[in-house]
Length: 107
Length: 230
Image 1 (cartoon, each protein chain N blue to C red):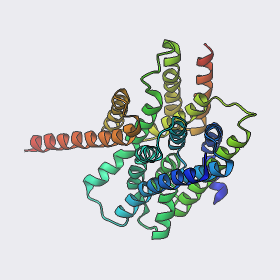
Image 2: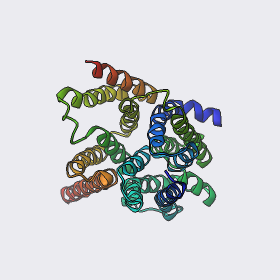
Image 3: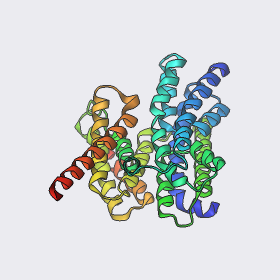
Image 4: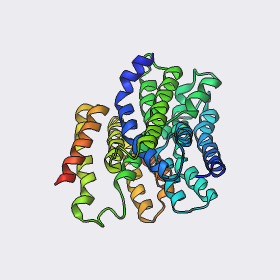
């Protein structure tokens, strides 16, 4: 990749990402928020993490290679959910996720 | 302080190594030199954005379209930033800038939980956590770009580590009716967005959908409660 094109891509994208990261924090900083806004902000974490999980698991072409390869991530994710509920541990969730994913991929 | 944070966050660091290395390998395939990989990884700190740049670049998409796509997929950071802002009330402008500018998904989840708990955790700890994770991510991506030809880590397995992490963070949330509604609707909305091919905006749009529906449910329940009281 030529340096000039890389710099254009990098700096332009970084400016956009930095804006999204910084602007809301400063816009809301030090303000007394209404109960409704506080409530809305409180719903962001569950909605965001559920959306990220769904974004990783849902793929329109997932079953193109057959049923089993398509359901492997879902079954592994179900196993991780059980571990998450039982342990609340990031480490055990990651370990169980890898083990389940690899084991199911070998079936 | 650094030791305390590393003790908390080392599983995430391992995850970053596992995902960063293959991400760096893919970035190297676009012709990026190691310094480019480090500069981009250390500032973006978003695997999805970095994978997207590589895919679109290799597909010959114009730079303006690539930037617009990365901006769209990164708009979710605005929601994280807005969500963490009320917990930075005691922070100076410089501390707020430092924490917000270095926010990542995993760091956001951990920082938010710690800030809510309030025990021995403030903006300094949040910033240190962000820097540790950014450094881990940047170095992992760069190492992946350098040694990509020697070590082959399957991207699907590395990616699933991140999914497992998000599942853990999701199920660490309080189990209330509003949270369940927000989570379920956000997940359903992602599926619908992806079905229609709106992959770039699926996450931020779905978060807004989940939050909006949860608020509507609350308003309806409040209204019913008020009518019952009358």
